[in-house]
Structure formats: C-alpha cells, structure tokens
Length: 268
Image (cartoon, rainbow, N blue to C red; front, side, top):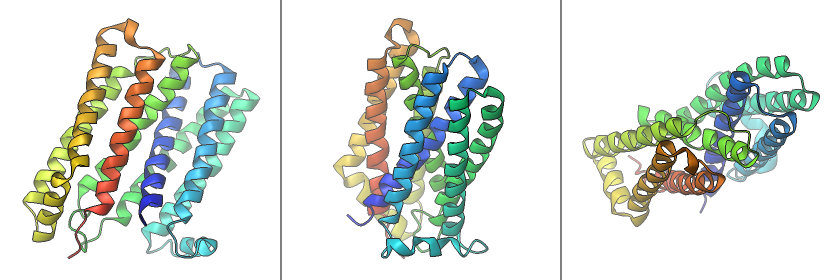
C-alpha cells in the first residue's frame, strides 16, 4: 500500500506531539514526575519522532532527495510541514536534555515552544489535504481529525507510562473520554457532510461506510469509552492494564480511520 508510510507518519507524529505536550503540562501542574521517568518518556518520544520522520520519507519517490521538499516555504504546505516537524524534533531534543540535566524551569520554557510548533506542524499536515480536487479532504473535518488523533492518543500514552511508574497524579480519564466523544461527533459530522456534498464526496461516503473497518472503528470507540468510563467511575480500575487496553484499542481505531481517509477519497 503506497499510502501506508503516510498513515504511520501522520498518526505517530500526532501521537508524539500530544504526548510531549501532556508530559510538559503534567510536569508543570504537579511537579511530581521523577527525573528518571520524565527522561524515559522523553527519550522514547524522541526515538519515535526520528522513526516517524524516516517513515515519512518512504512515501517519496526519491527519499534521498527529500531535502528539496523544504525549499518552497512560501507556497507549499508540505514544505512548512517538514520545517515545523524538523523544528519540533530539534526542540524535543532540547526538552529531553533539560530532563537529563534536571532543569525544570528550562524544560518548562521549551515546553511552550513544543506546544506551539507541534500545533503548527499538525495544522500544516492537515492543510496539505485541503485541496478542491478531493472533496472528502477539502473540509475543516480534516484539520479536526488530525488534532483529535493527537488528543486521543497522546495523553493516554503518557498516562500509561506514568501509571506503570506509579507517578500518575492527575485524572486523565475524563479528558480521554471527552476526546473520544469529540472524535465520534466529528466523524458523524464528516460522514453526513459527505453524503450531502458533491457526487465524489457521496461516493467516498458510500465506499467508507460499506467497509467493515468503518464499523469496526465505531466498535473500538465504544469499547474504549466503556473501559475509560469504568475507570472514571471507579478509581480502583485506573490501572496500567486498563490504560494499556484502551490505548491499544484507540490506536487501532485511529489507524483504521486514517487508512480509510487515504483509501476512500474519490478524485474529481
């Protein structure tokens, strides 16, 4: 599948941005994350960032010439995406270094930059697909879905790490439940808008909803909502196992959704 590198890159990069911002926010809010744990999470995320950038180049016909794609910042959202993700990677290295050095004030300052640049990177990724030639992509839903992937996966990823390390001092289940609800609402609006759009958009909607993976994704939303809902009501269920299963289910959900995003779009 030619689009598989893009599926992996977009989901992984959005997860990473959401996770870094969550780590920074929890660190500032609670100041209870140990240096060892914070550094561990940061290193894992930096490694994943490097992997995601390498995977993204596999989509190019000539990966060794990928550097040329950054030469058109004035007009190309692809060039801006590369620039912002490159800057994000650089800032993530600095942020990780400050975890290593135990410099809380400095990493807090860099964290602001991570959040801003990360948001711009996600926005740039979404705008690449904001083109009239593909009616299914050419809407605000694309931007919202890309940001929602970050909100759905990133906080839960960090929450899982902190729960394993017994250092999760904030209640993340409410936020995760809200993100799932937002994801369901945006998906519903997206599908209904396609059915009310151009013939190519209607064709995309029919193709999407006729596939088993669309309904499997709905099932994953329901399952994750159920698991996190139980954890929200019962503090004793906020375990690493529950977070692990919920994260895995939602990761599968986002993967299926992104596959359909690329595979079902009908060209004008």
